[in-house]
Image (cartoon, rainbow, N blue to C red; front, top):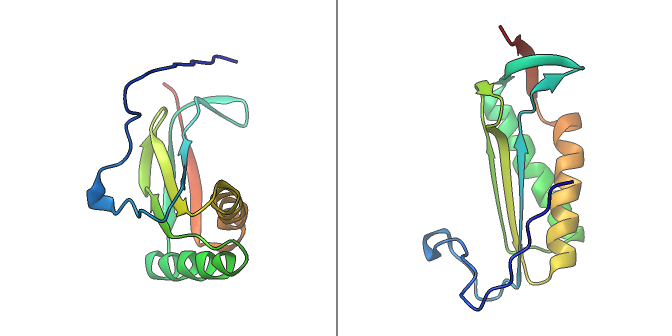
Length: 130
């Protein structure tokens, strides 16, 4: 495993205030799902995603609402890419702000576990590497 560790006296960069950095949020957890270079052990150059967009948005909102009851968080952002997503690029970005890290991690984990089972977004094709 490749690790990078940096100890610094400089401020650690954080997202700009434009997204809201809630002063009551002591934890910010993010997840990026990135397309790997293989799918089922075959080399690929991209994945293709499709969705029932309106239903997908509604289901994402429903899931986050349900999870928030057990794991109170302050904010959540979900971006999921559709169409062709090349190797090395993110297919999904999820960001959660909470008062404490336990809630942020639990909501993020719970959401990702349920996303594939319950949200009508599908990986429809692996585009072979030429």
